[in-house]
Length: 349
Image (cartoon, rainbow, N blue to C red; front, side):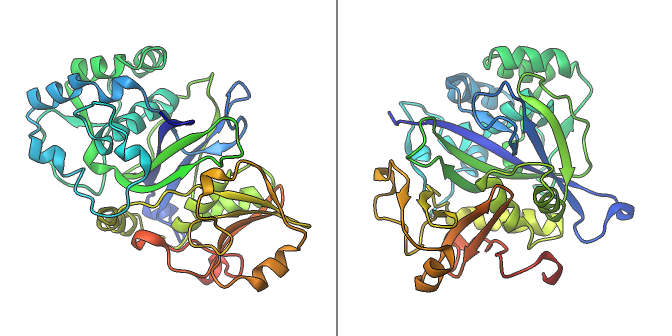
């Protein structure tokens, strides 16, 4: 058992038409959590939510087998040789590996929150991994409510619709764990997926206040203008995406990279004289045992002095509520993309 809950989020990229393209040929889906949310209320986040026991039920394996999905096909999702965050090792006597069940979580929670069902027909031979399919021609609102109230209904819905969750179009992207100084904590797997058009959204009103389709650059403009609030993981992952303007380039990169594994980002928070700072793995200020840092660490220095003293930098700096940025001068772990830093601008990339 861990002092946090496991969860999964989905970074959904939607291809734009040629007429809509300026620099980025895709938009990213974020939604603003409602004021009723128990965690990160009013924050703009990627869709996703808490892992449920139903996501690792043996019934899923039976359904996959009856749908023509072989063990070899499922094993494609688990051929990762690099670093594994704790949640991928926490199987709890389940025959379904977390690389499979957490993908089910991400797809189920996305359907619950915004009504998008990423799936493919049973026994589909379509192995094109660039774009996933969003199913529309069913009573989405009815099933959204039922699945939201009972996660077991997700498998029941897939059986009735004769589809399987499109696990293979989801690519492992990142893993974040809420700082040890927080009372409510989540270890979250982030997956990335592309769809070839911008689908219609049906929001779950208890969890979702509004939704947005924008490019990474547009989100930072909205953030700086104080029109929405981005939590640190969203800032970091959108900063990564800011370096890649082509949707197919992003997905092809993600497919290659995921085989190298994923390093867990457990931020360690510092209070400086003029700013807040979150240190990430590889930073000079990142401790050997970050889980032991259960209190805010106070340092009587300014951010500029700390940066000048540091040789290895991998951190997020918070100078004001809407003035947050990433600083990094080391190579990203697991062959990943280096996020855009304060010294750079999107116009130069």
